[in-house]
Length: 498
Image (cartoon, rainbow, N blue to C red; front, side):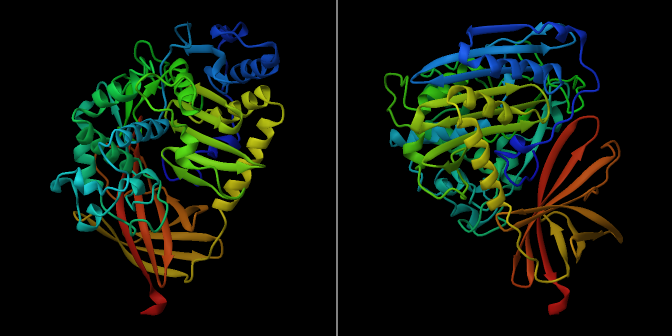
């Protein structure tokens, strides 16, 4: 979960590699359906089985909703391949950033009950010790919902056998909830912003975040197996597999909650999809389809993100996309409000093709719809990734978070970028532009401590500002397990202007 060009749609265009081998058990794939596939979905189901045999994921759990009801709901493959445990519609999967749309649903429900307003400043709900600057206190809830608050990204994995290394929500917000760009001025994808929204929901709802969520959203929608408490890889959940097909072999959760952390089932998310399409609205909840909140205007080369949903348009149709990628799982929901169609895909593999499968399901639900979706996403990604220019070739300055400062230099040479840190020059990977911000990464860390492992990476997001490069960097740590990505401020100035 690092900086990406289009975090919601990158997996749709991902070129996938197969596992080194496929277990012999996949010769006859297990399946459990609560709503069997109609005849018109036979081809899509066959593709699903082939993806499993080809090693794209040990299992997929899928649902299709149309005309106010579930028309297909089934799990195919293995929740635990080694133990021969099959997946079912009630198997829990980590849903990663789908958590953001769930958190936003709670924020809107509390707004409907006048417990808060999305135009409120977050400082009205957070205590002073959680705000690192006066500017942070001016951030609005609407800016947090749309990733325009100027708060950097952050992630951390928690392990059932290693809880001591984990940041609580308050600690993460208090330490890393600083401002790296003027609130409202630019899009910056941020787990931490949604963790702040979780804190706001807890204060406005007068309870712990998950208990307020259960009272206001999960219980009314009968999402009984959606929770923050489950350890992925534990009992009742799909075990996670890496990009090479190997079993991860540990139980884990992803933080911060609000921005990530929820686990759910395809059955629960089918109900969730029907609710957001304006069908199956429980007594006591207002029928406010999500598209009426997000709006369905905009041109076909525009990509917007709000309330955990990516919004793309094509030929008068709106595609709402909520997806998640993390270690051991890939998930996606796509809604087409004008047609009353929605699809859900869950898988238990790092980098799994959740949105590619979603495209197959859309095509089966409405001929031509999957192709239209894929083309709309491709256009949006091209617009978002439109290249800009770095005005100068040489910048120097510092990386820091108030506690540690490291002098750095970045030098640009044609299409290459080089980082100098602690006297060593390293060529960085250039991942292109994201809404006017340049993505660069280098296999080197800010800190080196015994026992932390060998693979570290600095992932930069920088934008030109006159003779400066401003932004932030994630100091990412992996050893035998994924660990965390911690943000630091970056401020560089062109040496040519001095």
